[in-house]
Amino acid sequence: MATVNVTLSLSSTDLFAKQNISFTETDVLSPAGDQMIVGRLVTTGSGTEDNISLKALDGTNDLAYVFLNNLSSTSGEYVKIGLCAAHGTDSTTGDWFAVLGPGEFMFMPISDMQDLDIEAAAGYPVIEYILMEKAA
Amino acid sequence: MANATLKATFSITSSDLFDSISIAKTVTDSLTINGDNRQGLTTMVTSTSYADINVEALAGSTDGGKKAYVYIKNPDTVDDLIFADDGDQIFCRLAPGEFAFYPTADNTKIQCKSSANTPIVEFMLLEVA
Image (cartoon, each protein chain N blue to C red):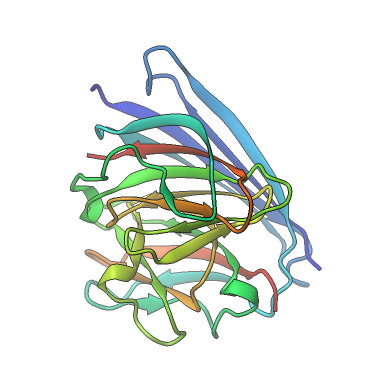
Protein backbone atom coordinates (compact mmCIF):
# COMPACT_ATOMS: atom_id res chain seq x y z
CA MET A 1 0.00 0.00 0.00
CA ALA A 2 1.34 3.40 -0.96
CA THR A 3 1.72 6.38 1.32
CA VAL A 4 0.81 9.85 0.10
CA ASN A 5 1.42 12.91 2.27
CA VAL A 6 -0.75 15.97 1.73
CA THR A 7 -0.54 19.38 3.37
CA LEU A 8 -2.86 22.37 3.04
CA SER A 9 -2.08 25.81 4.40
CA LEU A 10 -4.56 28.69 4.39
CA SER A 11 -3.89 32.21 5.63
CA SER A 12 -5.36 35.69 5.46
CA THR A 13 -4.87 38.91 7.38
CA ASP A 14 -7.78 40.86 5.93
CA LEU A 15 -10.77 38.52 5.73
CA PHE A 16 -12.03 39.70 9.09
CA ALA A 17 -11.38 42.89 11.01
CA LYS A 18 -10.80 41.12 14.32
CA GLN A 19 -9.44 37.72 13.35
CA ASN A 20 -6.57 36.48 11.22
CA ILE A 21 -6.70 33.10 9.52
CA SER A 22 -3.60 30.93 9.55
CA PHE A 23 -3.59 27.17 9.80
CA THR A 24 -2.10 24.06 8.26
CA GLU A 25 -3.65 20.64 7.83
CA THR A 26 -1.75 17.47 7.08
CA ASP A 27 -2.85 13.95 6.30
CA VAL A 28 -1.26 10.68 5.36
CA LEU A 29 -3.27 8.87 2.70
CA SER A 30 -3.12 5.20 1.83
CA PRO A 31 -4.72 4.79 -1.58
CA ALA A 32 -5.08 1.12 -2.44
CA GLY A 33 -7.31 1.04 -5.48
CA ASP A 34 -6.50 -0.31 -8.91
CA GLN A 35 -6.30 3.06 -10.66
CA MET A 36 -3.63 5.70 -9.95
CA ILE A 37 -3.12 8.45 -12.50
CA VAL A 38 -0.86 11.46 -12.86
CA GLY A 39 -2.21 13.33 -15.86
CA ARG A 40 -1.93 16.45 -17.96
CA LEU A 41 -4.86 17.30 -20.17
CA VAL A 42 -5.28 19.97 -22.82
CA THR A 43 -9.01 20.54 -22.60
CA THR A 44 -10.99 20.18 -25.80
CA GLY A 45 -12.86 23.45 -25.47
CA SER A 46 -16.23 24.83 -24.54
CA GLY A 47 -19.06 22.39 -25.18
CA THR A 48 -16.96 19.26 -24.76
CA GLU A 49 -16.46 17.45 -21.48
CA ASP A 50 -13.18 15.57 -21.05
CA ASN A 51 -13.12 12.58 -18.70
CA ILE A 52 -10.05 11.99 -16.54
CA SER A 53 -10.29 8.39 -15.31
CA LEU A 54 -9.23 5.42 -17.40
CA LYS A 55 -11.98 3.17 -16.13
CA ALA A 56 -14.85 3.36 -13.71
CA LEU A 57 -13.96 4.29 -10.15
CA ASP A 58 -15.12 1.50 -7.91
CA GLY A 59 -14.82 0.11 -4.42
CA THR A 60 -17.19 1.06 -1.63
CA ASN A 61 -18.85 4.39 -2.54
CA ASP A 62 -16.47 4.77 -5.54
CA LEU A 63 -14.01 6.72 -3.40
CA ALA A 64 -10.93 8.45 -4.80
CA TYR A 65 -8.58 11.29 -3.95
CA VAL A 66 -8.33 13.93 -6.63
CA PHE A 67 -6.03 16.91 -7.08
CA LEU A 68 -6.72 19.24 -10.00
CA ASN A 69 -4.81 22.34 -11.09
CA ASN A 70 -5.83 24.76 -13.84
CA LEU A 71 -2.56 25.98 -15.36
CA SER A 72 -4.13 28.73 -17.44
CA SER A 73 -3.27 32.33 -16.69
CA THR A 74 -5.81 33.78 -19.10
CA SER A 75 -8.85 35.54 -17.70
CA GLY A 76 -12.07 33.70 -18.50
CA GLU A 77 -10.42 30.31 -18.97
CA TYR A 78 -12.12 28.62 -16.04
CA VAL A 79 -13.07 24.95 -16.07
CA LYS A 80 -16.20 23.27 -14.77
CA ILE A 81 -15.73 20.07 -12.77
CA GLY A 82 -18.62 17.66 -13.10
CA LEU A 83 -19.35 14.25 -11.62
CA CYS A 84 -20.20 11.36 -13.91
CA ALA A 85 -22.62 8.76 -12.67
CA ALA A 86 -21.11 6.27 -15.11
CA HIS A 87 -17.65 6.08 -16.63
CA GLY A 88 -17.56 7.11 -20.27
CA THR A 89 -20.60 9.33 -19.99
CA ASP A 90 -20.82 13.09 -19.73
CA SER A 91 -21.96 14.83 -16.61
CA THR A 92 -25.26 16.63 -16.94
CA THR A 93 -26.19 20.20 -16.10
CA GLY A 94 -26.89 19.48 -12.44
CA ASP A 95 -23.69 17.49 -11.97
CA TRP A 96 -21.35 20.49 -12.04
CA PHE A 97 -20.09 20.97 -8.46
CA ALA A 98 -16.74 22.78 -8.64
CA VAL A 99 -14.97 25.35 -10.78
CA LEU A 100 -11.30 26.18 -11.20
CA GLY A 101 -10.41 29.67 -12.33
CA PRO A 102 -7.05 30.33 -13.96
CA GLY A 103 -4.27 29.22 -11.61
CA GLU A 104 -6.62 27.60 -9.12
CA PHE A 105 -6.39 24.12 -7.62
CA MET A 106 -8.53 21.76 -5.59
CA PHE A 107 -8.04 18.66 -3.48
CA MET A 108 -10.92 16.41 -2.50
CA PRO A 109 -11.76 12.85 -1.51
CA ILE A 110 -14.54 12.36 -4.08
CA SER A 111 -17.37 9.91 -3.62
CA ASP A 112 -20.33 8.36 -5.39
CA MET A 113 -19.13 8.96 -8.94
CA GLN A 114 -17.43 6.73 -11.46
CA ASP A 115 -15.55 9.51 -13.20
CA LEU A 116 -14.94 13.24 -13.30
CA ASP A 117 -15.17 15.40 -16.37
CA ILE A 118 -13.76 18.82 -17.15
CA GLU A 119 -15.17 21.43 -19.49
CA ALA A 120 -13.43 24.66 -20.36
CA ALA A 121 -15.55 27.79 -20.50
CA ALA A 122 -13.22 29.38 -23.04
CA GLY A 123 -9.94 28.55 -24.74
CA TYR A 124 -8.12 25.30 -24.14
CA PRO A 125 -6.72 25.51 -20.60
CA VAL A 126 -4.33 22.79 -19.51
CA ILE A 127 -5.27 20.79 -16.43
CA GLU A 128 -2.81 18.77 -14.42
CA TYR A 129 -4.24 16.20 -12.08
CA ILE A 130 -3.61 13.29 -9.75
CA LEU A 131 -6.33 10.69 -9.31
CA MET A 132 -5.88 7.98 -6.68
CA GLU A 133 -8.57 5.39 -6.21
CA LYS A 134 -9.00 4.70 -2.53
CA ALA A 135 -9.84 1.00 -2.62
CA ALA A 136 -10.40 -1.65 -5.24
CA MET B 1 -17.13 44.66 2.32
CA ALA B 2 -13.60 45.30 1.16
CA ASN B 3 -11.89 42.65 -0.88
CA ALA B 4 -9.70 40.23 1.01
CA THR B 5 -6.94 37.82 0.04
CA LEU B 6 -6.69 34.18 0.98
CA LYS B 7 -3.33 32.54 0.46
CA ALA B 8 -3.57 28.82 -0.25
CA THR B 9 -0.74 26.32 -0.49
CA PHE B 10 -1.08 22.61 -1.17
CA SER B 11 1.68 20.02 -1.16
CA ILE B 12 1.55 16.38 -2.18
CA THR B 13 4.39 13.91 -1.92
CA SER B 14 4.81 10.18 -2.38
CA SER B 15 7.74 7.94 -3.12
CA ASP B 16 5.80 4.71 -3.52
CA LEU B 17 2.53 5.50 -5.28
CA PHE B 18 4.30 4.47 -8.49
CA ASP B 19 7.33 2.28 -8.92
CA SER B 20 9.07 4.56 -11.39
CA ILE B 21 7.70 8.01 -10.59
CA SER B 22 8.03 9.98 -7.37
CA ILE B 23 5.62 12.78 -6.61
CA ALA B 24 6.66 15.97 -4.86
CA LYS B 25 4.73 19.05 -5.78
CA THR B 26 3.67 22.26 -4.08
CA VAL B 27 1.20 24.71 -5.57
CA THR B 28 0.26 28.13 -4.25
CA ASP B 29 -2.44 30.60 -5.12
CA SER B 30 -3.59 33.99 -3.93
CA LEU B 31 -7.38 34.10 -4.00
CA THR B 32 -9.56 37.21 -4.00
CA ILE B 33 -12.51 37.03 -1.64
CA ASN B 34 -15.16 39.57 -2.58
CA GLY B 35 -18.52 37.91 -1.91
CA ASP B 36 -21.02 38.83 0.76
CA ASN B 37 -20.87 35.55 2.73
CA ARG B 38 -17.66 35.05 4.69
CA GLN B 39 -17.72 32.26 7.20
CA GLY B 40 -14.48 31.78 9.08
CA LEU B 41 -13.41 28.59 10.78
CA THR B 42 -16.54 26.99 12.15
CA THR B 43 -17.47 23.73 13.82
CA MET B 44 -20.91 22.18 13.74
CA VAL B 45 -22.36 18.98 15.11
CA THR B 46 -23.78 16.84 12.32
CA SER B 47 -26.39 14.11 12.22
CA THR B 48 -27.45 11.50 9.71
CA SER B 49 -29.73 14.09 8.10
CA TYR B 50 -28.44 16.81 5.81
CA ALA B 51 -27.76 20.30 7.15
CA ASP B 52 -26.46 23.27 5.17
CA ILE B 53 -23.02 24.60 6.05
CA ASN B 54 -23.63 27.93 4.28
CA VAL B 55 -25.50 30.62 6.19
CA GLU B 56 -27.16 32.13 3.14
CA ALA B 57 -27.73 30.90 -0.41
CA LEU B 58 -24.62 31.11 -2.55
CA ALA B 59 -24.89 33.60 -5.37
CA GLY B 60 -22.51 35.68 -7.45
CA SER B 61 -21.54 35.43 -11.10
CA THR B 62 -17.79 34.79 -11.20
CA ASP B 63 -16.62 31.75 -13.17
CA GLY B 64 -20.11 30.58 -14.01
CA GLY B 65 -21.71 31.66 -10.75
CA LYS B 66 -22.38 30.65 -7.14
CA LYS B 67 -18.68 30.30 -6.45
CA ALA B 68 -17.13 30.00 -3.00
CA TYR B 69 -13.88 28.62 -1.64
CA VAL B 70 -14.60 25.82 0.78
CA TYR B 71 -12.40 24.10 3.34
CA ILE B 72 -13.91 21.07 5.06
CA LYS B 73 -12.42 18.65 7.54
CA ASN B 74 -13.58 15.62 9.46
CA PRO B 75 -11.92 15.78 12.89
CA ASP B 76 -13.75 12.68 14.09
CA THR B 77 -11.95 9.40 14.69
CA VAL B 78 -14.80 7.03 13.87
CA ASP B 79 -17.48 8.26 11.48
CA ASP B 80 -17.46 9.61 7.94
CA LEU B 81 -18.87 12.93 6.77
CA ILE B 82 -20.83 13.03 3.53
CA PHE B 83 -21.28 16.15 1.39
CA ALA B 84 -23.95 16.76 -1.23
CA ASP B 85 -24.93 19.59 -3.54
CA ASP B 86 -28.23 21.44 -3.74
CA GLY B 87 -29.75 18.50 -5.59
CA ASP B 88 -28.81 16.05 -2.82
CA GLN B 89 -26.13 14.61 -5.09
CA ILE B 90 -23.18 13.28 -3.10
CA PHE B 91 -19.77 14.37 -4.33
CA CYS B 92 -17.43 14.04 -1.34
CA ARG B 93 -16.95 11.75 1.61
CA LEU B 94 -14.40 12.51 4.32
CA ALA B 95 -13.12 9.63 6.38
CA PRO B 96 -11.88 10.48 9.89
CA GLY B 97 -9.00 12.94 9.68
CA GLU B 98 -9.48 13.77 6.00
CA PHE B 99 -9.91 17.27 4.55
CA ALA B 100 -10.76 18.94 1.25
CA PHE B 101 -10.30 22.38 -0.25
CA TYR B 102 -12.13 23.39 -3.42
CA PRO B 103 -14.03 26.17 -5.16
CA THR B 104 -17.68 25.18 -5.15
CA ALA B 105 -19.86 26.37 -8.03
CA ASP B 106 -23.30 26.16 -9.55
CA ASN B 107 -24.94 25.24 -6.26
CA THR B 108 -26.83 27.44 -3.83
CA LYS B 109 -25.83 25.30 -0.88
CA ILE B 110 -23.51 22.62 0.44
CA GLN B 111 -25.03 19.96 2.62
CA CYS B 112 -23.33 17.76 5.18
CA LYS B 113 -24.40 14.68 7.09
CA SER B 114 -22.70 11.91 9.02
CA SER B 115 -22.48 8.25 8.16
CA ALA B 116 -23.54 7.55 11.76
CA ASN B 117 -23.76 9.29 15.12
CA THR B 118 -23.07 13.01 15.55
CA PRO B 119 -19.50 13.83 14.57
CA ILE B 120 -18.31 17.42 14.22
CA VAL B 121 -17.58 18.99 10.86
CA GLU B 122 -14.98 21.76 10.68
CA PHE B 123 -15.29 24.16 7.78
CA MET B 124 -14.64 27.57 6.28
CA LEU B 125 -16.63 29.09 3.41
CA LEU B 126 -15.67 32.24 1.51
CA GLU B 127 -17.99 33.44 -1.21
CA VAL B 128 -16.90 35.07 -4.47
CA ALA B 129 -19.03 37.83 -5.99
